[in-house]
Amino acid sequence: MRLPDFFVVGAPKAGTTALHVALARHPQVWMSRTKEPKHFLTDGPPPTRGGPGDAKTFSEYVWRRDHYARLFAEAGEDQLCGESTPFYLYDAAAHRRIREAVPEARLIALLRDPIDRAHSNWAHLWSAGLESEGDFVRACAQEERRAAAGWAPFWRYLDLGRYGGQLARLYETFPREQVLVLRYRELREEPTQTLRMIVDFLGLEQGHLREVPAENVTTHASETLANRAMSLALRTGDRFERLLPDGPWRRGREVLSRHLQREQRPRQPLRPEQRAQLLPAVAEDVRRLEEVTGSSFADWLDGGRAVGRRALQPHGRIGTAHNSIDRPLDARRNA
Image (cartoon, rainbow, N blue to C red):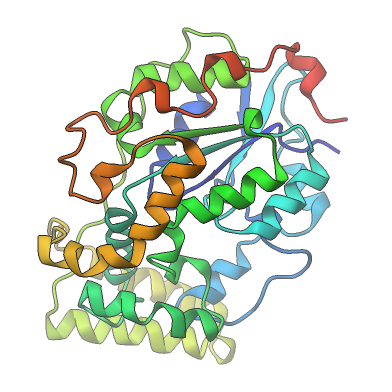
C-alpha cells in the first residue's frame, strides 16, 4: 500500500495550493490529484455537522486508508509521492498519525504573517457566503465560541496562525531534520530560490522547477442586500442540507456561489487599526516561534518594518541544504 513520502502540512492561506501545483510539475514527484485529502485529521469517519459549509468539507475527507492509498497507486517507482493538507500543522493528533504511518516522512510548512493569514481566511469564507460577520475583527472574536461548537478548523482565524505552539508540538513528534519551514513571502518573492531549497530538501534533481503558479486570489463580495440574501440562503441551505435533495441543492449552491463572485471586487485590505487590535492575541506566540526556530519574525510584530522586504534571512531557514535526504529515491518509497 503506497503512502506519501512527504507532506505539505501548512498553513492554510499561505501558498500551499501554489506549491502543490508547482511540485506536481517535477518529473520525480507524484502529487495527489485530490489536493487536500485530509486523511490524517481523523482516526475514523469525520464529523457530519459543524459550521456553515462544514458538512461539505467533512464529506471531502479521504479517511479510509485503502481509498487514500489509491491516490498514489499510479505513481512511478522512481517518483516520490506527496500530498498537501494545510491543517496537518495545526493538528497535533495528525502529527502522531503521520509519524505512525510514515515515520521517515518529510514535512514542508509555509508560514504567513498570522494576521494577514487570518484576514485572508476570513475574506475567503465571507466571499463564499459562509461567514455572517462582515467585520473581520468581530469575526475573530467569535473564534473560540465557534470552535467549542464543533466548527471545522478553517474557522479558527487566529489560532491557525499560532505557529510557535504548532511547531513546538511537531518537533516533539518529528526530528527537526525532517521538517522544512519557509516563509510565504519567500515563495512569492523568491520562487526560484525557494523551490531549489525544497527540491534539495526532498533529494530530487534540480533544474525542473523555476516558477510558482499565480495564486487564486478570492474577490470580495460587497454587502448589498442581494449578496446578503444569497449568503443567508447558502448558510440556511447548508444547515438543512440533510433534508434537501442532494442534486438540486448542490446545483443551487454552485449558482449562489458564482453570483457572489460575479463582481470581481478587489479584496478589502487589512487596515492598520485592525492589525493593532489583533496583534496582542498573537504576539506571545510569535515570540515563541522565534524561540522554537531561532529566527526573527519581528516584522510580524511591527508591520514589516523590522527587516524590510526580506522576511527571513537565509541563516534563519529551517531544513536547509545540509538536511536534504541522501538516500536513493527508490529506497524512500513506502512498501
